Amino acid sequence: MTQLKTLFFAVTTAALAGCAATPRKYDDESSRALNLARAGGVYDQDLRDSPDGTRSYRKGLFTTLLDIASLATSFDAPLRHLSGTQTFMFNATDIMATPDNPSARPSLIGWMPGSLAANEDDAYEHYVTVVDEAITHAAESMSITATKLTDVKTPEIDEHPLMLWSVTSERYGCGKSNCIIAYNIQQPTYWKTPSYVTGREAASYNIAANHPEEYSRLIFRQSGDERTFPVGEFYSAVSADMPPWIVMYFPPNTVFQGGEPLTYPVLYEQGQQLMFKEPNHE
Image (cartoon, rainbow, N blue to C red; front, side, top):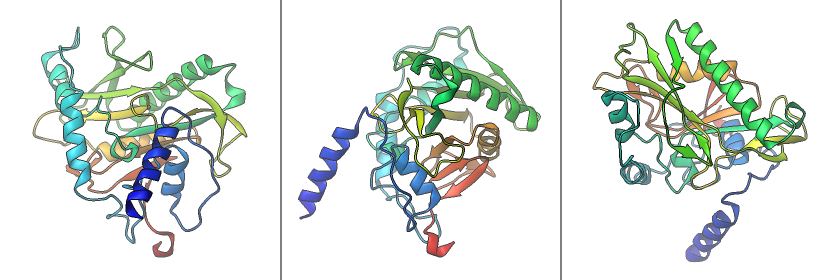
């Protein structure tokens, strides 16, 4: 029976790969975080609710997947026009990692209302504008300097370039190019919006998390031994300035608060950090 369940899950996963996540009814027995994650394509069973939200990821598998993926997807050559420190950061982190399970990777998920764009290409440009504005406003609210690097040659994902921002802040130890924001937007797909996504329209341009490689992400990285930048606060600030139809998912050990990584997964919606906590334990 266990083998049959595993086979069924593998077949389902393969069928879904590359397609937008299917809208589903809200599950009252699951957290809002899990409902949004599932609707956005984070459907694998490693992610689940737990009584307090801190045991919502299957232990043991995450570290192995992430380490292997990071090594396998490190750049073969330095990025042109980047400093040595910036190049080292890219080679040493999981910005370009593609673990098999969607729950093992940071993902930007969105359901842009269909009325906001004329087509999928137009929707892509609108997503980029929305994210750039959110980063700019978040930086202003935190009194840090964020500069988009427009003259940098970066890898492409789904034929769209990885976007880079350099962050400087003496207060948080960001200087000499050791702090960077990287994001990319996959080509949106004309799809449908789950009824429980705030600010929804029935039709939308969806960016989902379930494709093996072509998924959207927004990641902050600080190189060096001192992780003093409040990454969790930054993600909350970015999320707060985004429209209600965009959420951000982060697996364990990718969000830093108080200099320490959160050992459990979280999802950001409208500036709120949501945990994968069973509703009956709220």
